[in-house]
Length: 118
Image (tube, rainbow, N blue to C red; front, side):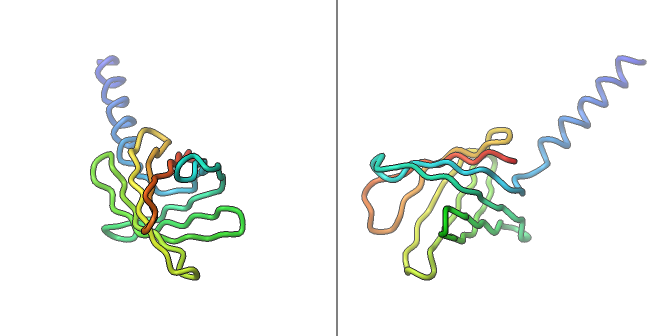
């Protein structure tokens, strides 16, 4: 009986962790397209009904986006509304990390980005 209770407790804990979602604040580290430099900052992900509001703070720059989570893939369209450009990033969710590639409209190379939950 004791083993059964322990097994059930583990199932509940693991199920809760699996459904914890991706909301939160993350440390962001990335590379620019073509490996032309690196950057760091923070990213905030907030659930908004069926999608997510995403905000990047990279140095003095702030970028905003909207994302959709499907399984282990988190896809986000983002923009710098002050400069009039936009792009897309697709992450793979793995535990407390999101790893992905991003592209900007008009560029022919991709950057990479890794988010680690605080």
